[in-house]
Amino acid sequence: MNIEVLGPLGLIHLVLMVYAIVKIVQSRAGTGSKVIWIVVILLLPVLGLILWFIFGPGD
Image (cartoon, rainbow, N blue to C red):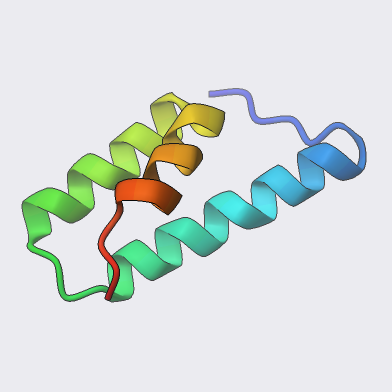
């Protein structure tokens, strides 16, 4: 997997992804839900983040 941070927007995106993954791991959601959300965020970076902010576990 080749991950590149290109400029300030790339850095902001990376920070948001790390934030989302940390919040997912710390949530009280089930293990299956956590794994699904992390996979969605990693496979669909921008769309996954948007979906997580809208529909993700609110813990």
